[in-house]
Image 1: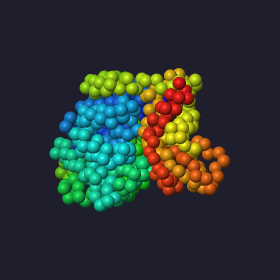
Image 2: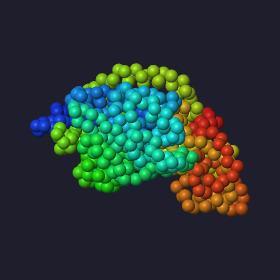
Image 3: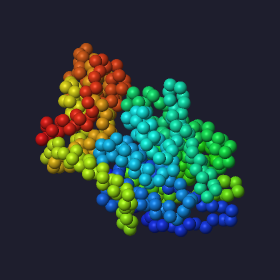
Image 4: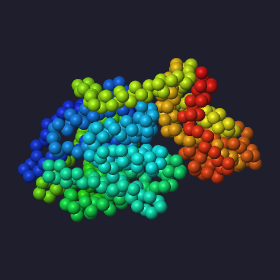
Amino acid sequence: FAAALLVALLGLNAGADQPDSATRPGTVELQLLGVNDFHGHLAPPEPDVGGAAWLGAWLNRAATSHPERTIRVHADDMVGASPLLSSHFKDEPTIEATNRMGFDVGTLGNHEFDEGGDEALRLVNRARYPYIAANTVSRAGGDLILPPYKVVERAGVKVGFIGVTTTDTPYFLLAEYARRFQWTDLSDAVNRYVPDLQSQGVQAIVVLAHAGALQKGAEAAGEVVDEARQMDDAVDVVVAGHTHSRLNLDVDGKLVVEALSYGVAFDRVRMTVDRATGDVFSKSAIVMPTRHAGIKPDPDLLTLVESYRKRDEPLANRVVGHAGHELDNEAVDSLAVDAQRAFAGADIAFLNPGNTRSDIDAGPITYADAFEAQAYEHPVWRLRMLGSDVLEAKAEQPGLLVSGTADIRPDVVYTVAANGIVAGRPPFDHGTDREKVGSDLQALVAWLERELP
């Protein structure tokens, strides 16, 4: 992560404050400050960049150039797959931090649904600013779960925001959570509500899209680029997320931006708006890093983070094992699937790729280290499956990580362990005697305590 972050930050602007650009008579310049994919990174992910207190300080500094003309937004995944410092407290610290950062509006990401719709809505209700979601609907009745848009006024100018979330969201969720909602086509949802905004006299329109792309030079490819091309020409700016990448480009007249992840950068968008018509006359953006050099952390946010850190330390610092050498991500994958097989007392275990997130350094392994490697806390299921179904799973899903699959006989019934992502999909969903035995994190910690004391 450190190397990739350094490369990404070198591609960003130096971050010097810029004066208010000249505007023609009858216009006003508004500023959008955008964040995406914070993922509960309250502490800096690297020693000299990011962290809630520095992100907040940079947002405050940027806002001083446009007093009363700045709007703060996010394209979400502000929580989910969070470090222990946030996750230990059900992501309450991150919600408190975003409240103190003064966001005006945000949208939903796929990770807000990691623990289901009720938990997503609980977090939304804890925010002191509105969330919007134009393409997330209940499967039961087809109703939107949140308002589709929000109008924010600055300096007498109305700006409309429409929120959308990647249609790939179900693939990241436990089946029981994915079944409750449907994520409809992004551009269709945006285009449905553009006329509503225009009927209210809103001509400056911004989409908050938890969908991303990868950019190389002036070109980019990915979901948000494809969808932006299909969006109404009335859309001026798309603040994107999800891919943890840097975006700053024009797509069919729409400015599309994304600011990496974990709070190491933010979007700074400037829109010159005609006061008479409300139309955006011009727009530009820079993606600014949140380097620590030359700025003091926000004291209020620093105090908040430190208060939670002190409460978190007894659990985070508990030693649960020792590694004689560094375990790279591939080794951690193998360890995790072995741990789940042992934890469930199963013959065979299956784990989806991408379930573990970090290496484990040589030396003492703390609970925080184990959590960082296995942060999703998916449930581990024990079930019984015919050998023929096990062989089908191996053949049709070769990317799955497996443990204990030697000499599988088609006519024999086996005890299988699978995490919630795998267990909810074919052919595992046909397994019998299904029992939830704990979480993947519990399995990993138990294995470390027993096998690497």
